[in-house]
Image: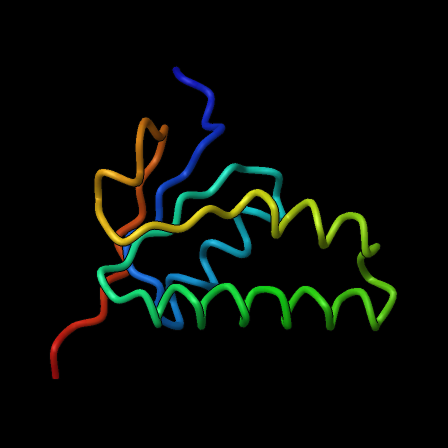
Amino acid sequence: MTQIKTVGVIGAGTMGNGIAQVFAQSGYEVHLVDAAAPALDRARVTIEKSLGKFVAKGKMTAEDRDAAVARVSTGNDVDALGPVDYVVEAIAEDA
């Protein structure tokens, strides 16, 4: 069985950025993909703010926060995923 080191998350909405954050906190490299650039920008800000709260509460060091944020890369195309070991699809359903 292959060890998972790199994770792709497709969809940068509420669920997608939360999933990306948890994987990054756990030490995985994460490639977060969404067709909408603003969604990727919001996801990065949300992840940084969320991890900042852990630092403020003393549950995470600033260095660990910075390392987790650095493990998240973003892109607008599925090709930006590159080679990954595991993919999570978190695209929002049209209502």
